Image (cartoon, rainbow, N blue to C red; front, side, top):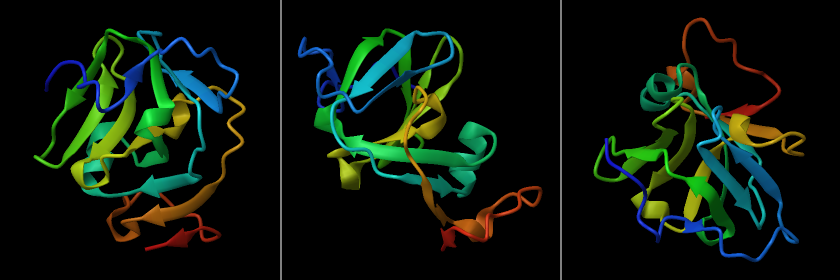
Length: 146
C-alpha cells in the first residue's frame, strides 16, 4: 500500500469550474471527491478474483480519460499496487474502493460506479471474467459475458 497518486495519474482541481462536468463522486466519508469533465464508458462488471477480494463482490466500473478526472479532495486517497502493472485506489479513512488502473492503459482510469453521484445515466453493458464469479452471485443473462 502506498500513498497519494502521482500527478500524471489524475490531476487536482484545475479551477475550470464544472461547466463541462459529466459526473461527480467520492468515497463514503468525503475524504476523496472527484469530478469527470469528459465521457464515461458504460459499466463493466469484473468478476476476477483480485476485484472480488478488493471490493468484497465484483468490481462494477466505468472509465474515463485520466486527463478528464480532477480531484477536489484526495488527502485520503491511497493506492494498493497489487502487481507491477495494476493498482486499486481506495480511501484510507473509510475504506471505499474508488479506482482501478493498469499500466497498459495509462491514459484511462477505471472508476467504481457506486462512487458516482446519482443519477449517473450509465448502463451495465458487459461482465468479464464471468467464469470466476462468486458461487453466490447469479449473472445477469441479459448482459454479454466473457
